[in-house]
Length: 274
Image (cartoon, rainbow, N blue to C red; front, side, top):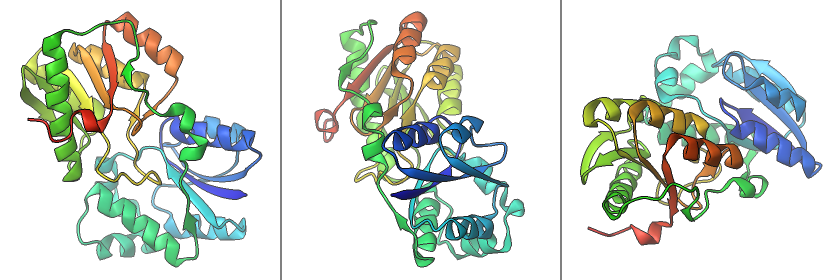
């Protein structure tokens, strides 16, 4: 099968291209200059475009006879909102047609717009199953009963915030919400929480209810841990099976080195709890 990959920042698009190529899939990537990781070129035919060149993106996939698309990788929401002047005519018309500029609205709108052009978005998860966040404590740093109470409290709040399409991360301490992820993204949310709540905070990250795995699935990696170390955070709790964990072995070693407990919890263990 020929797959078109719209690649944002980070390692997730690279992992997809690598795993798809192992399965003998023919991957054509549209990469964004100064955003997409250049390693993507090792695993797929790659066309580099400037941010906002929507018509060129469509034309590229049609020229390559691509029908099935995947959209992976981060494009920071704030970068998108404050870079509207860089968009081509097609992209500007698209943005002007949206009912609001929430992340989910934009991403779902992109999918619908490309489907109108005859493309079909497929679920990338079969190529990324090895990256799904596991259940249970994944490293050697244990946590206290009090921290575990904060984990359950924080994950429940995070789920409610995610379902409102505000963000997918909250940081808590002593059952107080210290920071909620907004337009700044996860890492800046964590750092802000460190300034507001001091050390030993608990970072909780979840997926939206009925998360569409074709886009915007939460990703956790070493960069998350570095932000937590900067904020002197103590625990990272992630909704198991609903987020991707990058570079698992190095991630676990780094978490141990930083003294951060990392745990994956299924949503049924915290959904609806008070």
